[in-house]
Image 1 (cartoon, rainbow over the protein chains, first blue to last red):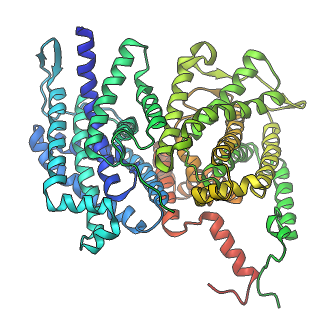
Image 2: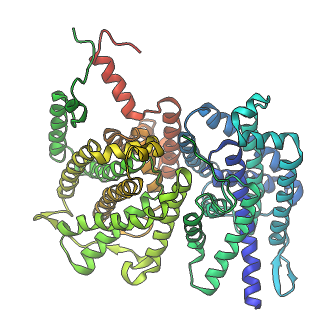
Image 3: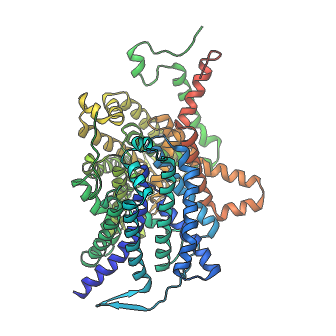
Length: 290
Length: 349
């Protein structure tokens, strides 16, 4: 039983990181209909920016994030302006390919700037172990779970109550109608990138301080795909649920079935889920009219 | 006076090429490629071999993604299936290359059904991600099936011959790849002008309309997966012959991205585009190296330290720029230039 609880708990922590990355994916997809293949790279880039800040200023977590998030939003806005905005009106496939190109560029640029060395990321977390019941947690792991809860609450409130959030939902729902209602879809797109980048920076800092910071951090983005798909590409809150589920499933399959299964359990799950529900668990089904 | 190139009969529309000059120039290109190892040194021949190997894969991917509109990021997975089938049959079973090459393609084609059948209901990005998942799963299975695939240790390929020609030293492998490329390109061109090719285009352009017109979506989607994977598997097998030592890293995810970049850069849905894209992207790092060499030793040092990053960066930049400014890719540029000159001086637009 204790083994099971530990597996579930660490699974939830891993899942929370997937969930954050997945929320970033879903944020952009919801507003613009584009899967941003550069999400992992965006996370890596913002984490490296935070790493440079932390290295020179020695801040603890919250002040660090207070500095990093605006910078991350700025990066998101810039990337949107440079790479995505000029593609407005092109087929979705072309824009998705641009994000793949962007991913490759960001990966190369990050290594050119920060080098290939692996380093510890000190975001001011202590190494003490806190026990909750039989399960020991590191401080950073608890922060991760808490931050996910905060992000989910913020996202929920944002889409439910704020004017901009509702405008974003409107754009996702029907772009032309949104335009007719006086919503600037260009601004909504830019905002989606900024917010997604902000979420990515939170995820990046937490993941990097849980492990180390190194140039293959972007891979976490690909690892989070099952979470986005499970939740349905256009559901930000579904992405969070999907992330937690995938994290737990991965850990349980590693613990009970076989070594190394962790790496692919999530992908096997989504292949199975998509066979039954081609739009993910929480995704909206599109009705095609001819 | 000639004011354009008009196709007046149906035969002209479905012909591989109704242009004599095109046949002549293509023949000349093949002759030039045949002479290449005699004129150029070992290194250019190796590069050309790599171009041909990847070109076969790119042509295959273009049938699936460009022509049938099914986006695949699983290229690396299918190549791995081909490469490993080839390597295992050569080392464990000791079969000759003449047999293992087609079998590698077939193995990839059969495995593609495993992806194809669950993907029948999926569209667009969901499909892309399923193929990505497949590449991950294949990668893991190779590591997992340690007894057959040697897992992390990888497989050394033995010395082999094709119809008595040694593939290890000299231009043997180059000629084999060249011959296979010519055969596979002709095959692709002929598939494209048959019912199958037209059905693929129909289901890319509008699947519901295609269905109404009597195209069986299930069958033609699976055809697309199988034919494309045959090409890709063959390309993976040739890659294993070229590098002579394979492990999962040889078939890393980057191959999928590169293959997609090749067909986008070359021009989606066109065989010529896939060939141009493969040649361009494979030779790009070389040309960049030459440019850096021209800037002296400091630039050379920088380049050798960060060769992969600079290469990646330029890959990305090239993809983005092409999508932004020339959505038709290299093939589009080719076509526009051709149209301009063949209609000169009355060309317009």
